[in-house]
Amino acid sequence: MTELLCDEPDFGFTEPIAAESAYLIGLQMRGIARHELWEDGHSIPVKPIAPGTTHLYDLECNPVCYTDQPFHDLFFYVPREALAELGDDGTPSVRDLHWPRGAFLGDEVIRHIGYALLPALDAQQHTNQTFVDHMLLALRSHLVATYGGIQVVKTLRPCGGLAPWQERRAKELMRSRLADGVPLVELARACDLSPSTFVRAFKRSTGMSPHQWLLAQRVDHAIALMRDPARSLADIALACGFADQSHFTRAFTTRMGVRPGAYRASFSRKPG
Image (cartoon, rainbow, N blue to C red; front, side):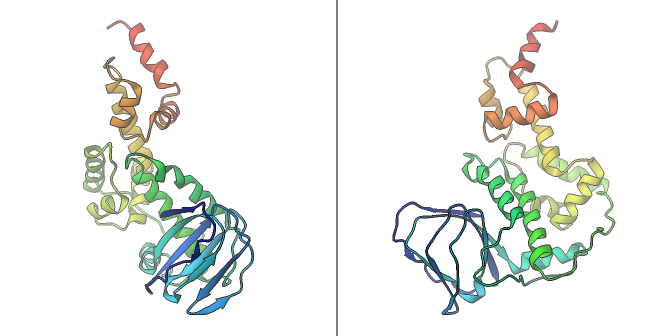
């Protein structure tokens, strides 16, 4: 995932991209009235770009763009192998996506995923890795279901929970790296599962997604640290892996039903 921002006019042509078996999924954060597109040296008819729309670029076709206006884009890099991997979980295997060439699409799912991930790009610490992994898995599933040209099966193949050793191993990994988080691919590999299968099996075993379980552990750790009056809430938030104090406050309030400051104040009112 890459955010590109240019506030100056007369950007010109993009550099040619070496052909590879992958796609770029572009989310337009800013509208553009004038632009041009070429694929494999051939001009592709285009229209003005509305903000919030999506375009798919096949990197096997050497896409080159031109614009003389400022722009702001969010790009997702999606290898064809990542699309095909989804077939390991019972979905028909897909490597190619299909869409009207040159069209910018009003894909609300991609738009909401993109905007949900923007704060993760701005975070000062790598504290949102598990959340980002979940969102990118959702994006991949949406691309296959919407642009893969297959009939989507509405009922998933039954998925059992984790074996006791798998659940224990996954929880140990997440506890050992509570502040930084553990990428889903690493958790899945430790359990000898694909990421998609791991997420479903973990939720079946624990009643929570890995990201939800990790947030709960961070809140529990924060409660222990809050008993030290010398530590500020901002310091506790970073020590427990939250992006900032406001992120910590939202997660804490959701889990405990009270804001961290009020919860900490209750310590002084309790005997002992």
